[in-house]
Image 1 (cartoon, helix red, strand yellow):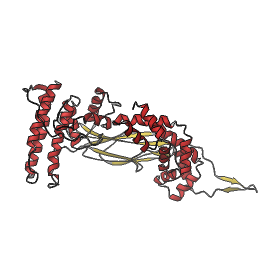
Image 2: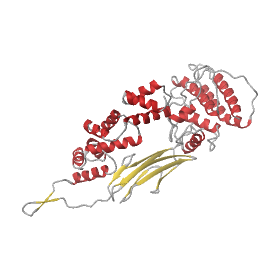
Image 3: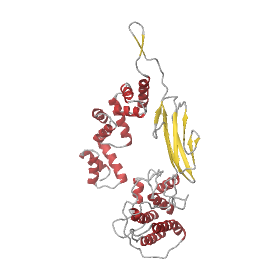
Length: 430
């Protein structure tokens, strides 16, 4: 069956290549659309040919090989375009995408599940359904060094066909800017915000959150667990006492778009009157304003779940709609030790990625720690910089090929020393 796939795809590619020899300067819109439609039909027919037709033996044809990187970007839920079209056709041809028989050009949950099946079958880990560097490298294994196009499986063959499709479209793009690119049905999109933010937010215990949502090309939308419906709207959820993730699902036919937003609720705190006893046994009320008091409380709640620099905390408070003056007051009176915050942030960075010492200092300064605080955090994080170099070298090797010298240069670019870079290269066997 694999050999049958190869023959079919090669013959189809040759047919398509001959179809594409035309002068873009003289092609009118109707002609181009007819050729695009013909190409789409032949792509659709490939699956039926692979499943049930035996072609007679034929000599292996030659064809100008496409660029090696046929898939030039990462793809995930919500991605659209001809590269998504090519990916779907490849997954259909190889039997991983069975829910549909014709590509749509939209990357939805159905495509994600099919890609996860492909990744599991081909030993790509993690099999998350994300079309990233590792999976792209697997799909982009068409020999681009000779003029002979050798197709070894359905995924590569369909990628080559997609290249020809792109050539047809790109040849007319400069002179016919308004020309449609392909027959791709509009897919649903969704947007969800909590208190105006698409990211995670923190709110005080017992306070409210406003959910605002919108969509396009959707027949229906639902927010869980709140139960709100409608393709757009806003609703207030009052008296929140526990953190919650809200998800918006908008559907159109078999496709759907899903987005989420996280709302963290701070722990309840004991409140007391802000008073200062005087020498004459009278009580003097603090001059701190209500907004300053709230800024301090908010700053303390932020510091309760992650580390901040002073300026980073000020920026976060301003994002929470505090004035600059109140934000500075909140940060200044939060009780934070900024060196210890830098150390905490440094350890969190090292938990998910490898850094050189100077690279970690740069990362901390990017998070608005001062140089002195960043140096303190890096120097006291307990990192073994040689082992960090080995870890970074391994991560580089997982998504690209390097010579020993090339890998050492890459590690030095990440600010490892020569000795650390050589240690990293040795650790991965170079």
